[in-house]
Amino acid sequence: MSAPIVPSALPSNLLSNRPDILEAERQLEAANAQIGVARAAYFPQISLTSLAGGVSEQLNNVLKAGSSIWSLAAQASGNVFSGGSTQGQVKSAEAQTQAAEQRYLQTIQQSFADVENALSSYQADGKTLKSLTQLVNTNLEYSTLASLQYNGGLAPYLTVLDAQRQAYSAQQSATSARVAYLSSAANLYLSLGGDWINQLDQQSSNKPSLH
Image (cartoon, rainbow, N blue to C red; front, side, top):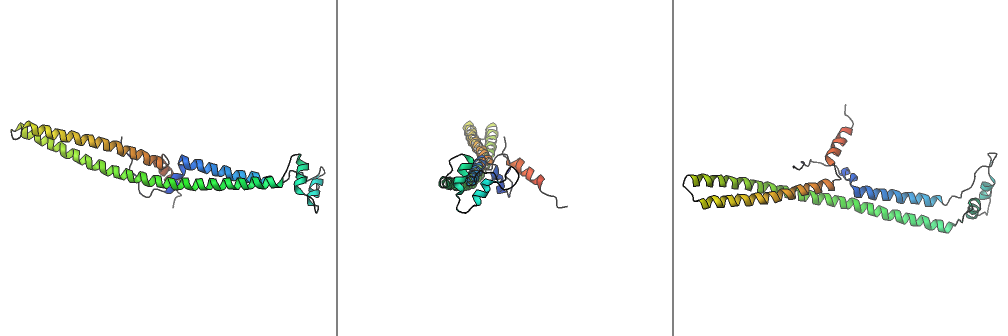
């Protein structure tokens, strides 16, 4: 397994594909829709035109001075209609929308923090893995040299064993570092909203031609 190379200048709109942002966005859209529903309740359900296509009696009554639009709406619809309760519903829907907006903003802010943490860990773990890989190579060279010295009668076998022990220890550390590095790559992948490599390719292909 190998981790993908992170390109420069990754656009922030990649984060719009994160599941948490998509969920918060849908909740905000639903809350806005509820405002529309609540405000629509202010409009009485009456017929604007008569059977002949002219002004209906209900509309004529609404326009008469001193008439109550709410009571007419109740008469026309046959349902209990209260301007006060409708106003309360609108305010409630607006409050829910404000809460949804706040959650949406907080989710976006958290996504940027997630990316920062993931990138930092990915870079740090990459440096650690590179350093330990170099240490492994150095210890393997030393182990080979110790074996040659032993075969030439220039060093005791204890030197060979010590060199092999150091090489094995370095390999174990490098393996652990590689696991941490790949785990950081997976976290970065998630923080960027998933399949960001293909998303970049798609965005590049969708750019308008300059010719």
